[in-house]
Each structure stands twice: as C-alpha cells, then as structure tokens.
Length: 438
Ligand SMILES: NC(=O)c1ccc[n+]([C@@H]2O[C@H](COP(=O)([O-])OP(=O)(O)OC[C@H]3O[C@@H](n4cnc5c(N)ncnc54)[C@H](O)[C@@H]3O)[C@@H](O)[C@H]2O)c1
Ligand SMILES: O=c1ccn([C@@H]2O[C@H](COP(=O)(O)OP(=O)(O)O[C@H]3O[C@H](CO)[C@@H](O)[C@H](O)[C@H]3O)[C@@H](O)[C@H]2O)c(=O)[nH]1
Image (cartoon, rainbow, N blue to C red; front, side, top):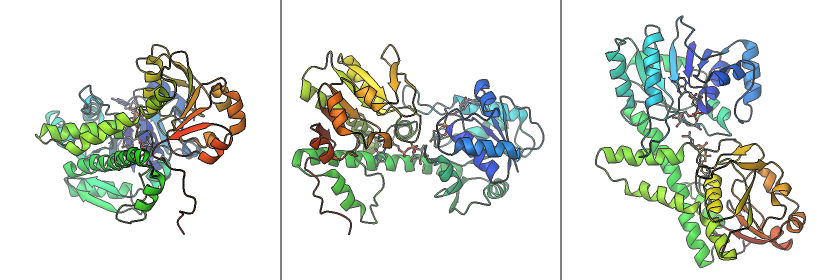
C-alpha cells in the first residue's frame, strides 16, 4: 500500500521504516527540512537501536522516501499523523500541530484517503478531525484512531511485534485499510470506536505510571522501616495478578509520554467534571520522588554551595538520547540553585539544556572524567556503562565518597568494599541473599 507518515520523530520514523519493512511504499513527511535532508542521506537524527541499519536497508530497497512537503500526489491509501502533542502550561495536550496537518491533508489528500492519528490525542479528537474535514469539503476522507504503544530504546521490536493493535474506526472501509496495512503482524486486535481507542492509550500510560508511583511510595516506607523494596517488588510480582513489570523503584518516570499523558488525562477528566484523585496523586508522588537525591545530599553536607556533584545519566532512561522530562535535568536545576557545580555523564547525550539554568551544562561520556574530584555522585539513568565501574579507582578519584543510586542497580557490597558511602531508594536493609526465585 502507499502510506504517508506525517511527523518524522521517534514514532513517525520508526513506524514509517517498519511499514516499509512490511513491504509498503512509505513517504515520511516532516516540516523540518534539515531532518529530511539528513534522513534522505541515510543519517538517523536520534539514538534508537537498529534504526540506522533499518533506514539503510529500506532506502536501498526504495520503499522509504522523505519529503518536507506533500509532493507525492498520486493515490495514497493512508496517512498516519505522528506529530508532537506537547503539554500546554495547563497540562492539556496541545493539538495545534495535529490540526495543522489536518489542514494540509484536506488540501493534498487523494480521494478516499484514510487519516489515522498515531499521536497521543485527547478523547474526542477524531471527532474534531472529522468535523474539520467536513468543514473543508473533504467528507470523502476517512478518520481513525490508531494509538501507538512503542517504547523508546525498544521501538522497532515494539512496532513489529506489538502487544496489541487498536483500531478506533467508524466504518468498514477504514477497518479494511488498517487490516491490509498490518496484515503481516500476528498481534491481537481490538476494534472499537475512536473515543475508546483514544482512551485506551491514556489509560495504559496512566496505569503504568500508577504502578511506578505506587512502588516508589512503598520504597519510601521501606527506607523508614528497614525493608528492601527490590525484594518486596520481587515477591509482589510473582503473583500473576500483579506481574513483575513496572515495579522498579527509583527516581520516578520521565520521558515525553508518562509526564505529559498523566497530566493530560487529569485534564480530560476535569473537562467532564471528574476529579481523577488517584492520578493527581501519582503525578505529585513522581515529582517529589525526583528530589530524593537532593534531600540526601543536604543530609550529608548541609550546604551544597561550592560542591561538585556528578550526575550519571542525562537521558530519561537507557537506550535513548531523549532528554524530555528527564529527572536528571530537574535534579541538575535544583543542585545549581543550591550553589553546586554539576557535571553530567551520558554515553549518547552530547549536551544538556537545563531549563532555568542559564547556560547548557557540559556532558562527558567518560564516567571517570565526570567523577574526578567530585564530592558526590548520583546514578540517575541505569546505563550499563555505569554498573560495573572500577570502584576502587572511583573512590581514589573522588574528593568525597558519597554515592546515591537512584535506580537501585548498583551492587551495595562492591561499593561499600571500595570505601564508598552508598544510599539508594527503599533498600533500608542489606539484601538478604538467600531470598531468590528458586
Ligand atoms: N516518543 C514515544 O515513545 C511515543 C510513543 C507513543 C506515542 N507517542 C506520541 O506520538 C506523538 C509524536 O511523538 P514523538 O516522540 O515521535 O515526537 P517528536 O517530537 O519526536 O516528532 C514529531 C515530529 O513532527 C514534526 N512536525 C510537527 N508539526 C508538523 C507538521 N505540521 N507537518 C509535518 N511535520 C510536523 C516535527 O518536526 C517532529 O519531527 C506524540 O503525540 C506522542 O505523545 C510517542
Ligand atoms: O519499573 C519501572 C519502569 C519504568 N520506569 C520509568 O518510567 C519511564 C518510562 O519508561 P518506559 O515506559 O520504558 O519508556 P517510554 O519510552 O516513555 O514508553 C512509555 O510511553 C510511551 C509513549 O506513550 C508508550 O508508547 C509506551 O508504551 C510506554 O511504556 C522511564 O523514565 C523509566 O525510568 C520506572 O521508574 N520504573
């Protein structure tokens, strides 16, 4: 089939390349001319495992094309909208990019085109898109909601083997096109109305965020009563009704999705006079959780002025260079406000724009360089590169030996043997090694 993907970011590029791999002809359109030129030259603008190879292969096969305007005017079967829906100041999803694409598609879309949103959009958006097309004289265009569930760092696998496909449609024609596009995927399919599809996306992210904030609250209690949250999560997760995933305590969730989508769902509920009390608490717990290392540092040093703190990890999670809503940036801003000098280390992020910090902070990829003469270190992102350092060398490099493991991934015994002082999240007691899954 012939497919347009509008918006060539994390979602659009991965989706476009995966559709090409499935045998379709794909045109990725983006208003960012530089990005399009780089992609046409085979250069991937973000860090995502497997993407450079996939781009190379699909360019060679002639199935993927990049354009910054709608020059391809012959029959296109479907257009997927994958532009950003960033939060407004009030936390609502900003739909201006989506509606701007709708205007373009009304102008350039060929008759009978199916327009599907992959962007995460508030419940009711498909209906608004339908209205706009009708107003623009394009009642022939079909509208659907096909929410996206890929995770950054695992995006290709998630797209080629999704846990589910959600088709929010209002006609058999739309369903037939979606089935033809995804026919080589063996995933369960849920066919529903567009508002239900839109809600499935928000409810899924909100539920995962709730699990994280829940386990972080348990961790904070564990710290105070001398229990170990890692083993609490292990014990809980063995119950199949609970499951082991998304129970890793730490500095909370970041990224371009959970923070914005939880706030957007609180707003969606508010707009229909429903107070989503639970989700508001999830958001609040997450914000507070990010500051755990700051309070520990103040506890160790009382005053942070003049100290050097090394933050390990800038991206919001390992496997990506995405720094949107990264806990590391929030923490850096707070540390700078307390008078500390912040050094950042990350294997793929090259520079850190810290909002409210004046200048960009420099980022090195060498942990030993970042730790030289540091008074304290905080592991914010659990990149493999940080897990097995030469701890004796680390101890000798640092001015003071204070470490905060914000993701509970470092081996406490190893660090302590090297003479480092270690704090973590909710592991108030030394792990009792006999407790294993037998
Ligand atoms: N990033 C993820 O992991 C993920 C996963 C699932 C869903 N989503 C949702 O998908 C959407 C896109 O997210 P993303 O992370 O890929 O965003 P992104 O910022 O990486 O990419 C968006 C792209 O859209 C382009 N764009 C904006 N307006 C345009 C226009 N009028 N015409 C053409 N191109 C335009 C931008 O230049 C940019 O390249 C969001 O709604 C997000 O919530 C994201
Ligand atoms: O047990 C856990 C699991 C995750 N996280 C944090 O949660 C955030 C999100 O992680 P993850 O879900 O792996 O990353 P995303 O790429 O943001 O993917 C989420 O957001 C996407 C955008 O909506 C969805 O498509 C995905 O299904 C959904 O998992 C990260 O900061 C993680 O560090 C934890 O703190 N504890």
